[in-house]
Image (cartoon, rainbow, N blue to C red):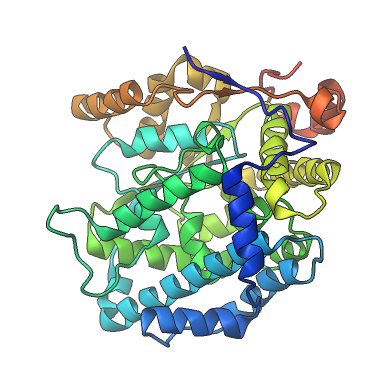
Length: 418
């Protein structure tokens, strides 16, 4: 039976020893949140200097200023952002170097992908991992998403394990040290299939900064004011590069942000089968706002828990409206709507619908691979998080649900939070 987990100190946080140590280390080692500092560090780390098209610098500057201009941010948050920007800038350098060495990558033909999207916490992760168990699909595990292009000459060791895998495994242990609930919320072990948004982060454009930093209004406004089509084309090029390393050529992908970017997604992948998941939005807000409030204990000097809740209630609103507005951009014959309760009741039936829409045979071997994954990854194996909207945020579920009536009238999902 799964352990029941409840965060007892959400509004009055008590930092663990590990969290305190990380906060102290960051305070003793301040970072400079400037484009020049990040790019200089990336060049030094990689030995490369060609970033490709330089328009990304403007977006990187907004990322950095979003945090640098906020006096309520902790040194830990500043260090976290610098290190992530360094990782993405270094990854961009390596990808650009690979494309320069092998321009034939641009000519690789990708087969029609299957792309899963929907609000966070609606089953997208579980579904994409089930599909990825079918070895006829190409997917992107976290260890590869973290470092898409290996260091030139940095091959597997004597044990045959890619060093990127080992680094990712070490990082997963560190993450669990400062967030003991992470495995229950969103497993990030090296084999876990990651969001393709990771590749767009090399181009410094995605909604990722909002989830990473609990709130990011400055970046949000910039992001929403700009067409994301170029960044989806960057994603396609990055997928071609990963396919050059190893096949097959039919990808299974997933990311919640596609829900509000169905137009750009269709521009880059016009032949994709798009799977859209649906679940009670009240439960989504409850879960994500709680997670953001918890991580906010290290992100802010004085966390505004109600502000975090409002931000994520707004974000869910905007994604649902965009998804309803743009759903007609995806032809009916290429779209699958998945309702969470029906999916949980019959996972293989949902998978069969996806395969049928994509025109892929669900072979006996594929069924066995998917069922083996399900058997080895039982739901809630890391514990069941419990929430309380009323106690933690002073919000009545029924009142919040009315805010999303525009969505529920189109997609009458089962109410999960009473």
